[in-house]
Image 1 (cartoon, rainbow, N blue to C red):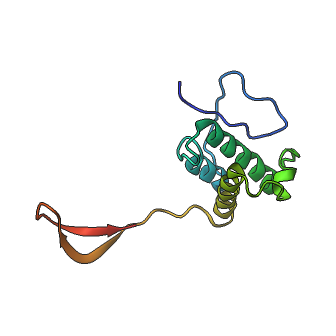
Image 2: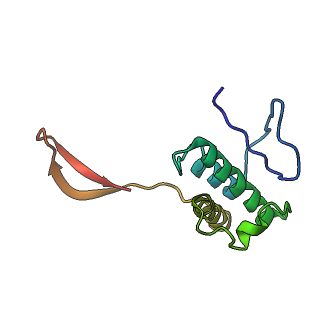
Amino acid sequence: TGEYLYCLQANRGNPSTTVTLEGQVKDDGIIYLIKNGFPNVKMTGDDKKDYYITQLAIWWYKEDIHGVKSNKLDDIKAGKYDDNEIVVHLKKLYNGAVNAYKNGIPEPSLKVNDKNTLSNNHQLYNSLQT
């Protein structure tokens, strides 16, 4: 169906049947990971790598923030693979999730520039900045 599932606990088996989540996710770190991980963000251009990065980031986050120990990330956390492309993206995603957990997810904002500009077809518009 084109939808992806992520395992929240590394020591359990992967989901093999329909998974139902009741209620809403209230953890800003998990929300950050889902919004900024695969499939919403393409990090390497390889769907399998991007899915793997997002899954590892979820496990790492759950391990460090919620104490769900897996031992699957010990070498990565020790810096053994810091120059690896996957680890570079993984650390960025993980750090963003920890920041979201600690500080919340900022609401997007727009600022209207007070300068009027003419477009190529000479229509007047205000510049928007995010």
